[in-house]
Length: 506
Image 1 (spheres, rainbow, N blue to C red):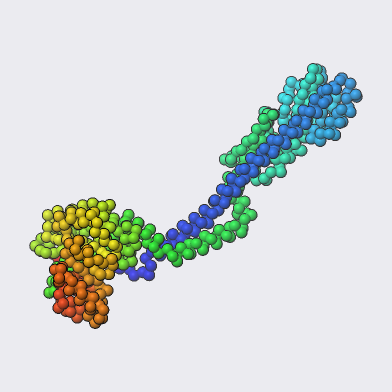
Image 2: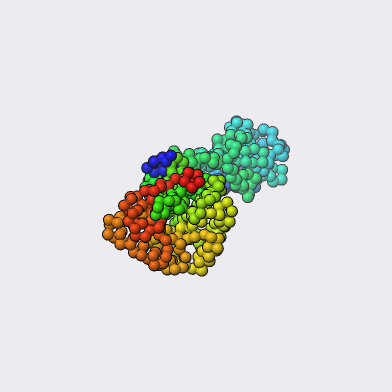
């Protein structure tokens, strides 16, 4: 049963529109997020460079201060106090300066440290430690310089020194790693960095430390959602407008997509419409392609022009001929019937060198099967495309004729008609299109055109088949004027080929 629908491809159109919406909206967000992510990577790498240079400069200042103290170091702390005070004033990042000799602090900018035991061998030249006296529990960076019996250890205030990393992106987790410990963006020591995040590093070329950044992969996307409402609105609007325009103007695109799926699913099936002689007796049939698209049965007028334009018509025709062959064999076609012919529509391109080999192979399978020896296979060449009488086309026709295949010109006079075709294509019949028959014989133009075609066929001795005959008056007038075969709703409607073979032929 044929299901009547306004647009059988409505669902496919909607699917295309939804996919297009998703591509534009989410694709746009992803592209923008990727660009934001890439920009964030570059910015973070710049931030790492700034942090390394900043910490380098503070360590340099500290070592310069150490050397300044060592240059005038003595066991007399009282004489050294002005040096310590000068260092503290001129280098704000230095928290304390300590002069060590004989494993104890002999002089310091912080009196609380004087006399405290201190083994210089326990400290690296640059290291990160936890303060025990001045700011207990807070991170400090130490620098150690030695000259002779004297050692100077300076401490740099951790929160001040590492505050530079807090100036960077708040969503990025930074750490500064030293040989024995590390400090994070929250000034916590030895904390664990986030897992499964992009890790960027920048190491100092002067001192043993590395600044690292851990970037959340979803961070840029979240930033877009939180701070780019206008961009999201624009992408959403664009993603609505474009699919809507596509929906309005996508008939051919959707149809081509549906044709591809139809080929994969083998949805094209053969229907047959009987052709009768002047006595109303069955003489043959034309096989018509129908598209079983879900529950909808689609007529060829809807899809054949697009199929020809896209050249899907080539595999569609071969698929149809395979089904015709199978159904004919299954029904043990007309063992005692003679002069029965079965015609199949082809387009001119199928006679070209590129496609003719498979057509010839398909026809040979039909004509060389002894079970089907009483069937004459006729190929109806449509004139919707230009028929080229080149060598390849003529060779293909010659090969097909050797197999016993006959040719007729379908819808003669409606497309790229040319009298040269009648000379070169060895046409065995001409078919007058329904558009001429509809107005025959009342319409003067239709009457004259049909009369001229009939006169031409008589002179060339080519039989005529009139398509689209719907009234008895049309049939009588056509037969009276020399038409040998008739086809139309007056006699038989199209029906599934298997039904035609079992009910009308056997």
